[in-house]
Image (cartoon, rainbow, N blue to C red; front, side):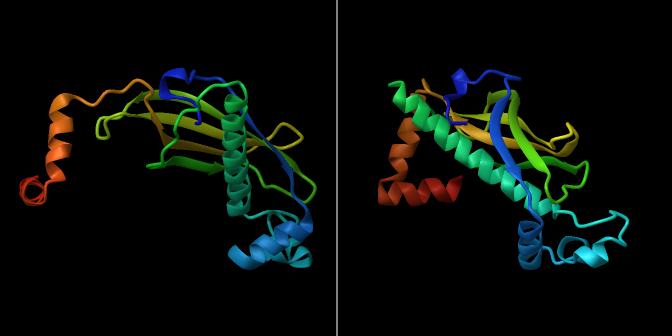
Length: 185
């Protein structure tokens, strides 16, 4: 999130936007990244257990990820426009779960939403917190088509590094001491 860890509220839906999947886009993506016949060949796909052309799950994920990144950048700009300093997002240590619930078909409009369901200060990286997120994608019929449980880092606004840690960090910058400290760690 582009909000400080302390400012993030739990279970508050953050809309990411929607996307309409066309047959041409589905085929183009699948041809490049997931060339299975039910993603690339409308005629053969009619005879699959899906009953027609469907988007690759990775296509659904990629669009959602792009929507998430764009929405977070827009939130950063919104906060700056209000005269606020946005928080600092960090990388993601992983995805805890990912489920494809229903196929995405040509013409489907999928709406993506991000919800922070839990958070805690990081045990391993001082000054950062972990966000536990649920990303959902729902089609125009209200059907959940995709859901993921993601983890991400968010910087703590008011973190002050303890003196002992600052001294250790400073000592690593002195060539001889730095080598010795890294060797014993």
